[in-house]
Length: 101
Image (cartoon, rainbow, N blue to C red; front, side, top):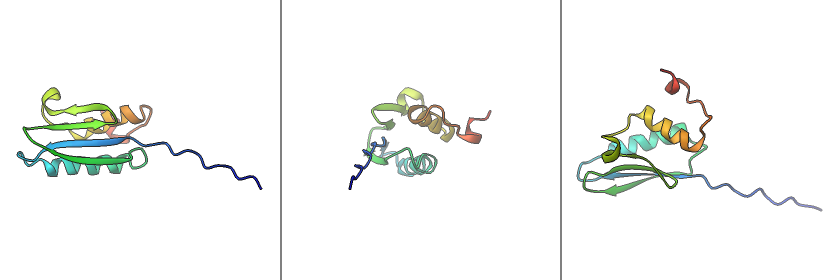
């Protein structure tokens, strides 16, 4: 009886959102995590919320920083955030109404 070994599991990327606790940005970070998990439920392995301080708000997908509040000027709108994550995970994926002007 030949048994085919299971296909190796492909590790899905981790997204981390580091937010400033002093600025009380937990709700914003949590909302963005929820949006990403809803849209990319089959493409993301996890979304981690990381408490920080000093005005930090940074979103990292895998090893790539896709948003940094100081570098990019403020906070991303959800459309921009989803497009940047999509461009990293599945560039050919259509995000529906988000990709429409």
